[in-house]
Length: 400
Image 1 (tube, rainbow, N blue to C red):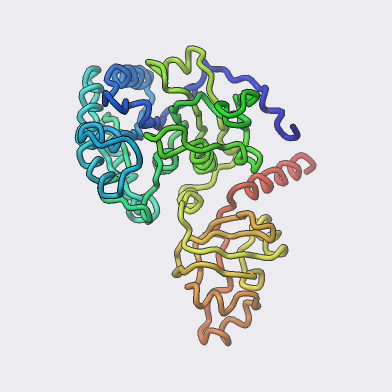
Image 2 (cartoon, rainbow, N blue to C red):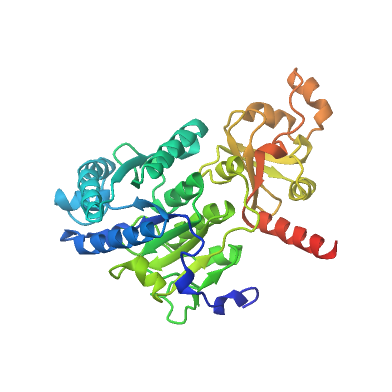
């Protein structure tokens, strides 16, 4: 298969946490909660013992723990199957108390203090709230506590939620400047196809970069307790690796899963970007729900890939409703996302000047606006466009 020679590359499990000073560990619901018996206490105790060992080596640990809804529905004895929104919120309200208590008690066995942090989508998408959340997490780490983070499902609705903790964990990892993100799951890594559907699926130990081919390999969720799947894990990988944070996908089905990783259990490693974007642009690139879309022509795409601003002349179509300063996604002529950035205009004004030269803006709008639809300082390349630019830079440096 063209472009997939990395499939047979080996990883050194014993160095999985080497050169790691701060790690975010994501725990899936199905690992932590049994549908009939509730909390898997023995398994939780083993994970906390692993965390204690990492901390003893000087590694700061943050945990993004699913399980509140799953645990709450077990406590409330709700039937199997999909829950209504209000049932999910009620389950979260009950389960979050039990989940926080369980983590606190298990970590306390090794003298570790747990701190509960509940986040909503707005806490990572709105810049001021993002910075406040980051400050809280950093303070907890400075006080030697382990933050236990979850989405605040008691207030989140379908329209304003992450919907899975894979991407939340990636946003936390970029927010806090982690070196490594570990997604513990019911599968031990990425395969060329869902292994439960295709016996010939090939395991991928190392993924140097997330290409469209890699994205096409992702499947859906495998359990009713889990809202995520390989697709959301790949999306998490794109968020994390762009900021310079490597990511592992590993099985959490065994006791002491983190120790098992270092003892030889296999995993898929997504390498961090060689040229990570800065903190502000990491926040922009990681926005999960851009307010609008700007579709550009070939000339504008070339300009963006060379590091220039997006001018109105190159914009062919605008979708969505947004205000100046909102995050918008930029798409090329092939329909693939090129970049994300902060809009220089409200959508109404942007539509009026789309396709027009910057010198015409004042006559069209009645005021002297910005020359750029999205300024390069407020723009970051995303997806395959970022990889293409890095490859071009590499070739230039090799010949220069």
